[in-house]
Image (cartoon, rainbow, N blue to C red; front, side):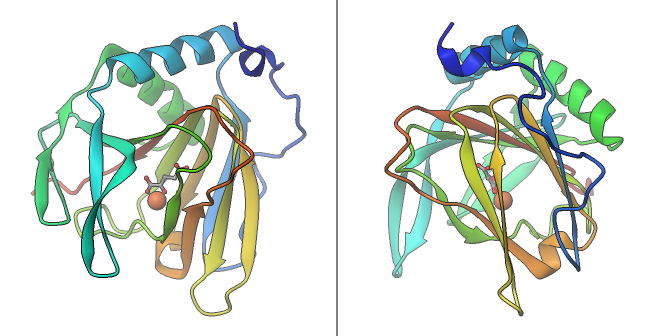
Length: 209
Ligand SMILES: O=C(O)CCC(=O)C(=O)O
Ligand SMILES: [Fe+2]
């Protein structure tokens, strides 16, 4: 097992009851919610079994293909549109069902879909955005589960520009809820210091019409 998977649970002090945001939003960090063996198993399973595809993005008015890969899964073939391309959610895999169950238990919320991102190294990240798409349940919780390389995650208030940063550990859970997406942007900053991959899962609730 590579070294990163051998960290003990609760190596780092954290308080899951503490709100990381000072105002206008709620973010809780639960730390590592899976044991080393499960974490290693899920990382390998997701890396190999998910049907990863390259994402498209608009940059300086041009359509570009991102190095980061994405996938979209859910309990129904919900549609998800970005850069004018509509994708339909694939049915849950066994691993996704198991992870979802644990995340629902820990966060006390339910989810019906999951957007997955695969960052091959620290040079791949995600720019400032909020996840307030109209198909998502308004003020619904978004649960972010991370496997692989530990990466920094940042929030920036849309008006005050106040920043909050935290580390997302291998096997960890972070939950954003309430009015967070209306008032705060978040991003995964790129870094030259990290060379190994990271898989991130954001469990969401799509409004079913
Ligand atoms: O990879 C991450 O931690 C963030 C992913 C994210 O913000 C998103 O998928 O909307
Ligand atoms: Fe996001």
